[in-house]
Image 1: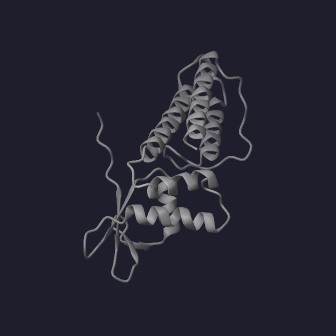
Image 2: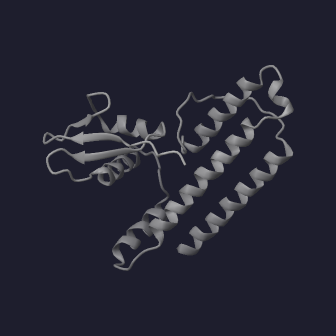
Length: 187
């Protein structure tokens, strides 16, 4: 098993400024949001106390996107999250969300693997460019979940999917339908 890369360490100074220890410069919440979109894990700690502030800042990033009209989560999901925190009981919602995002990342990774798998079409002229466009399209559609930045392509080339890719796509659609069903039952 390969070791997980260490998260990018961000230190918060008493002045509330955020310092990127990797590049030795100050960063903003937007910069941190960009690191995460590019697939980096971050850890934000208070320089003086050593307290882990990552969760607080990630929630702040989401709140700022929401305040700009960029809908991150549906209102019904936000209501369910508030209920789960306020109920006083141990909630399955955090574990469910973690599992759901893990499944989404795994599904995306399988789609990308299948697109890149060796097949007779791989030797066709322009196939690598088309695969790069498909990868960029997938990243644009999923907001970059699963890591890797890359350029977003506005008009990706379309190719006839292989039968195995269709089966995997059907499997992913099935998993998504199951997740939606479970979410609706949580309400």
